[in-house]
Length: 117
Image (cartoon, rainbow, N blue to C red; front, top):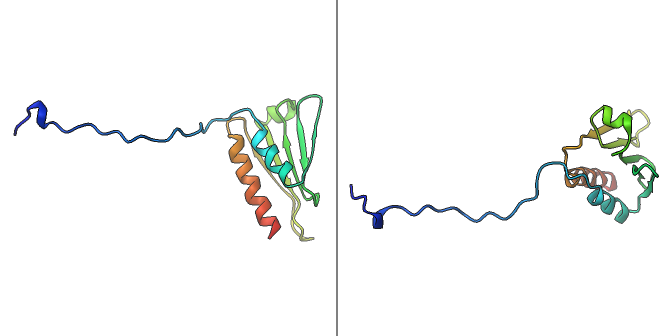
């Protein structure tokens, strides 16, 4: 086998577009922008927590970076939904500080799109 330098294979490394980090980003902006565009009521507190309610009042989203009880449970985002059906139970989905806000926004976008149908 000929191993002269001119015959060695060239190491090829494809250029990969820079991807955003999958770690928590500490920002509520992607979620708040989405909900604002969708007409949700958004209220921030002096403690820097933010509470959002859907126009029909059936879905609540909370960004709770300064809520002690939320931090004790390891969460910064909470979503509560009350289904329209009378016999359906409300449910809660919570997200910890390591979940990127873009992922929470995508979750809410899917939920909102489902509700809008």
